Image (cartoon, rainbow, N blue to C red; front, top):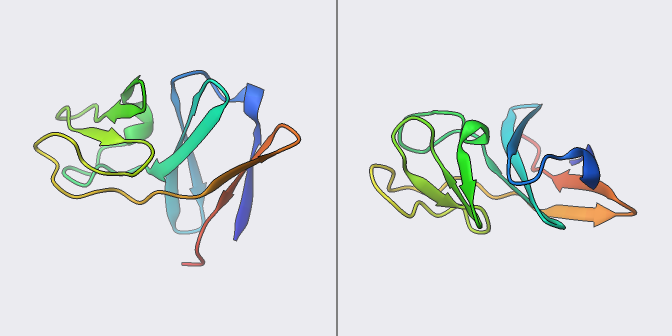
Length: 103
């Protein structure tokens, strides 16, 4: 399923935005002209990653400080040890699209 999240310029720089699409809860981040989409739930404590602080291509969970790579979803620091899902993003004529599997 393909979902449009809006114009790239409407996404805040180095901040997360949460989108609920079907059964998917997705955190979308814009860093410069790049956009990343990961599962919004921290794999350790279910906190919303879209509310976390962004450093380069990392987001820090607001609850316990675990860091996740926005490119791979990998957990990079404790207490999280499991990755979060990563979703393909495409940008066409300034519009940002996510590709999500049917749930």
